[in-house]
Length: 137
Image (cartoon, rainbow, N blue to C red):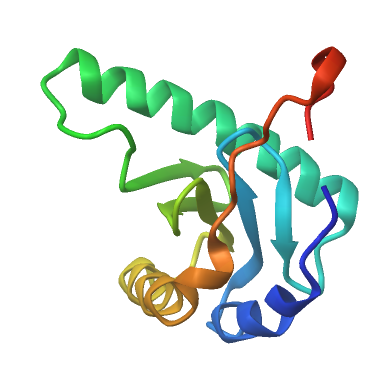
């Protein structure tokens, strides 16, 4: 999948928040849809794949413990040196934001919600469809 060039400038607001390092829009199946300027393609693709796995695990936990719906709304991972925030961002897509440890988590969550509401139609990833002979596109 190619990166959507229109998303780079749309992600610039969130990476302008102090101690936010990167923002990547990812599909449910682990593909990068768009990324902020300072994250390279390889790192963005690795983050997209990781977010897909996190979404799958979170969905399983939610379903196993009485959650409603087929998707999770938010995942926050705290690790030594920072955070990873992942929120639903349109049909089949998620917004992932990587930060340092001194970030204002409330501000990041708010800015992510504003961004998703503002540009939700740009953050939609249609499901891949199978073509003849099993090709997935």
